[in-house]
Length: 258
Image 1 (cartoon, rainbow, N blue to C red):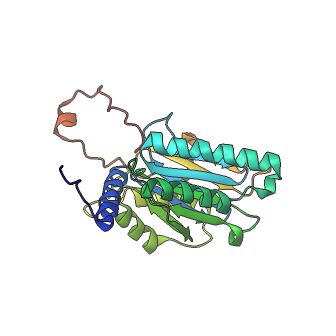
Image 2 (cartoon, rainbow, N blue to C red):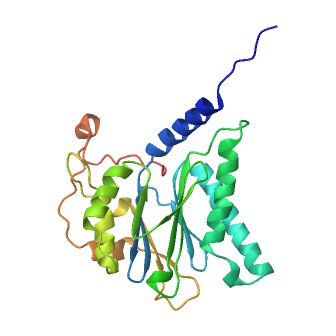
């Protein structure tokens, strides 16, 4: 009788973590920035239908990077949990902290299970309060770890490079215009050069405490986003050889969010 193949628990967890991290790094970064009137989310996302930033409840938003089908399942589960809790108890009983804990338990269980692959996702759960001091921003990793972020946070893609740019230029209590400009410039920043991301390739949403409606989540239209960004110069995204040889009328393919 052949002996079963043995892998130490430490090596198994390391392999699962490496697998998840590689999948997340292939996606485009998502930036969250706290500003004077709420929390801003910005991502480079050419798709107009597959969103990476969404509303969960009145004052709570969700953002994710990684495999779309996996974080979409988590988003739907979060909406259902929030709706049931708000209906059974009170709308004020639905909190960002409670949702973050629920997501952490789900991700941790999946990561520790040997029966299925770990989720290749990272999440933001944000909730705004009546003042900037009451705002909450949680970052959840593929293995269920939760971090309470302050000021700004970034996940996916070249997260280290984007985070360094944010750290150097972030100002607490900034206006929405300044926060949008900072987030977009950080996403376009790289170690070699900076590029200008076209407005149509940006997905931008806010939790805005100044809105009179109970629901504080709002997406910024391309027209408003263009007004906030103003003149930024020509796009510096360098086409590759195949794109350079294509006729001017050729349109680049639209990739789903990663």
